[in-house]
Length: 114
Image 1 (cartoon, rainbow, N blue to C red):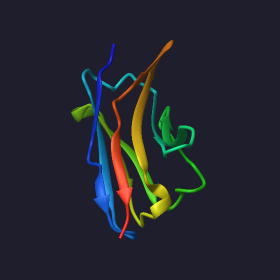
Image 2 (spheres, helix red, strand yellow):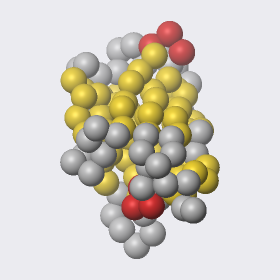
Image 3 (cartoon, rainbow, N blue to C red):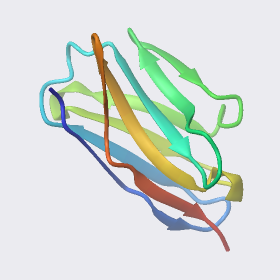
């Protein structure tokens, strides 16, 4: 099992930045699939960014603005979010895959508003 705890969300003005963290309860060095998802009110949860065997993937809506990274020494996955827009407002969740199971964090709220 893996417990995940997200942090770093909050209220930010359009154009601002936030860095989300997802701390795992165990070593992530052997975990090949990790990702960040988000869910806005009334919408389905969607993939924002992922790392799979070292390769990164981004939703078109965040390419060039968001960066996913991992620090195995800290058992943490990050999502750096720059040039934030109101449409980025959502609850952000991290997920890791330890075959055959998916593990999710509890989510952190990101609100982009002036």
